[in-house]
Length: 130
Image: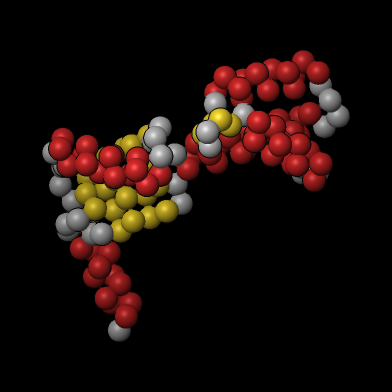
């Protein structure tokens, strides 16, 4: 569905109203969506579609994948989460994966950011330098 500029702008404004302290507030989002469905303004389906896209992007931005070559012990996991929370804020959803191809180290993905401290990543960068 092609979304008009007006609908996209309205969705961004509504999405901004759904945030408190720089974080998405679920209760505000539910209230905005229910009021939008009740009132049914012009192009409300396009606004809902754009609002859904913005919400999905925000949730993906809060998703963290930590890849390591071996299983991490609990103190290491807690330290990683504490460091990521300090850098990216609270309410992160952390998922751990074991990827033996990394050889050693960690690869951390936070939304679109990739922090690659793995041995395989270093070897790849070294090979690309030659």
